[in-house]
Image (cartoon, rainbow, N blue to C red):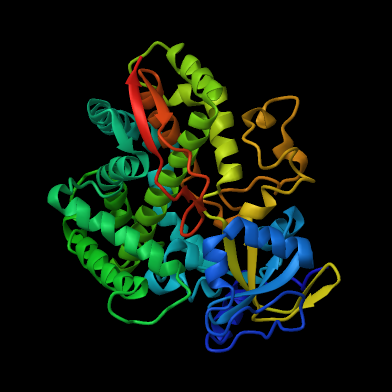
Length: 458
């Protein structure tokens, strides 16, 4: 049983009435608050998966935790994901859920808009992610990724995190922004690193030298950089995503404001760049640990016998698809999703108050043994016909979220991953120089050493 449904417009009014300086006290719920000021933030950052598994084991599928100054209520399992992400009663606000994290540095982006306001602004991005546009990006993706891979091969050994992050920044700058960053690339790249760390730190004080202070500077730099491009983008005919956003109009025929454009493109570039970096990094981590899967994917890719993938061929890559999905199961780039309850609701035996911070854990749900056999094992064939463990529940596998806020770029992410695998594996064998078992999940999952690898030409 959940709260009664209200219209999207009424729900939006209720969101705006929620106080940001005071959220619901969750002390009556099972769980813990941890240390003063930082809560369990430091433990969570150091051992994210272990912390969530211990809390779930000790307190069950509903437990409170505290990261920094705010308590949140964690709802674990596919039914909880369905309740919160589908939000059929219009009772969960993403804007308020992320207000003190992403909202500070990426205000009013698409993720942080609710109900009818969200639907209105999602229109800005629809043209850029239609199949026809995705297909048009394919040659450029091949050219950029292919050139970077050839450069890696001449070096022989690379830190894969640094290498793929650089490659995908170039992808983002040309396809998303329509710009060749040149000497500016390093500064833009560092801005995204600083924003990611600053958005997730529990220590939010503007003290020089801290992650939070660096994120504030990066935010100002990135927004100024993007704002300077808008006038030219509006009058041009380019088909990069930034240009398409700038030329999109509202119902009254007017352009969306410069502020709207900057908010949307900055967050989209940030999210797409870092999430795809994480996906490719973790996929390579697993197929170097499991070289039989690297060979199987290579054989599948080589059988196509073409210089470049076509858009229609993406669906033919079954083994690559299984590896892509299994990587997202084990290492979802967005490890959890935040909301705030608008009205009191009931979940199981618990009555949960209005204005409560709500968290769902993609990372933990994806590893529940009741959903997946040997859930910590890399086993791509669990997605194959005859098994399809991810279909045991509509929200057993949800790396791209669900409901109205389901990631608009999910097909682009899969396309970019498969093009990258095509350029990487057909002609080169990758061997990890060290399989670091130490993992960082904040701000995005990655082995702490960045995965140093050796490339060998086949």
